Length: 603
Ligand SMILES: [Zn+2]
Image (tube, rainbow, N blue to C red; front, side):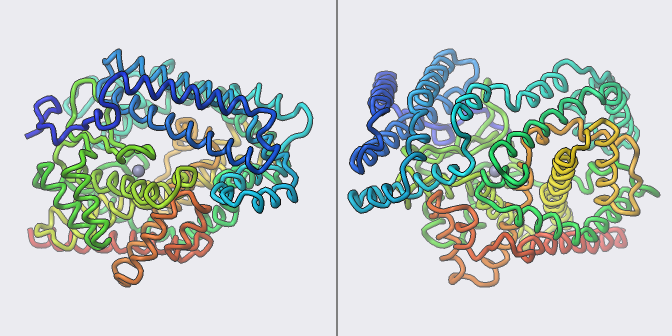
């Protein structure tokens, strides 16, 4: 019953004419964006001459960005529907050019705003009360002041910026295109090419021989290029450490979380609390060993599935009903807005189709609906994905409705909170209603995998990043030997005393592209923790707490992510938030074990 996009009724497809009905409308907005950029560019020497000029400039900037955002949204969505559509590709290229031109023409804004004397700016706020609407925008630009370089410094860094972080591209090209990992024998003895894309699916095989062979074969190749990978990663870390020092941050962790408007304390609390909560993870691996019937659990066993896929499949309409029922707890307004979005306003492009982008996402501009792209196949996972993406879209909906455009978009640090809340609400509701043990086990398995992959694994990565940057800051060269040693020690800590930690895993850091982003992945772990704590409170405190959660959604980008979360009663420096996720994970492990043994004993 897998439906193809082309055969699906219109209500299951995006109608992008709601954004631009005709090509002429699209082109007209392109011209508007160009004019707005030019008008703003013309204010280069006058932007901060008076309160009125500054207000005028900021209004123009916002207006230009608003149109550009809408243009980009339209171009991206239409191109994602059909990667073979040349017209869509041309529109995307056109908008990318407009964005580049806008960036270049308005490069002067931040330095000009940073150059305003504090007293003068206070005077501006008095002279033009409407300027208060841009207080957050101005504050965000001006908080960089202590970290700006003087003289030619900024110009130099700007010129060099295209090469910063280029190690990540090199890593991607090398690991995904140049390296060849050979082949392994699949479950039926067939030859399967081993690539970065087939590796994890092979590790999920229920045939241990396949898993072991994929694991060993992959690292055989990595082993030959260890010095190259070490050199690439060391160079990226060194670059980040140096830039942080140049910008007068005490260290690169502080510099990185500064960009998120977060404190190093949040980062350290996460690592410390997760480390204190490793026992449930060891318990999970014990469970895995028991269910797989192995005497020793090796690292190539940890992706092997614990339960089959849940029986039963869903039509999309059933999935919508499931998700709507799961978010009832979020109140009437949330429920009815989402219902409208899913059933009347065309938020979702549901089915896979020829040329359509794979995966799932939610994306919305200030002046469009918060669209979702799915590739719905009717599995439990697909329903969970709908719940997740609906969480993003509703967050965007509330943030856009409650704020002016300059304050609407929320940051990456909180971006996965609302989506994970919905995902957890969906899973927990299904768990309560599931009639078969099979479905329960599948749901619990999904829940455990989410916590293992998002909370524990990302925190281990976060700890490795911290270690690398600290070593570099202490002047220690990050050689292959050092990186393998540190990584292996961490894996041992995180897998515990009863898992056989194969030596090859010391090279795993070579595979992880996220390490080139520097201090990024901890956000996955903090988001799931916040979501877990929120779900607990929604379920126990009801209506009274709900209002706080909705305030968080409405905050958008109007305050810092930590302050926004405080609206929902979540303090990211409080270990209790992280512990909520650890406890939830521990409960899932215990419940899985109980159900599994019960079913086994009945047989
Ligand atoms: Zn997401």
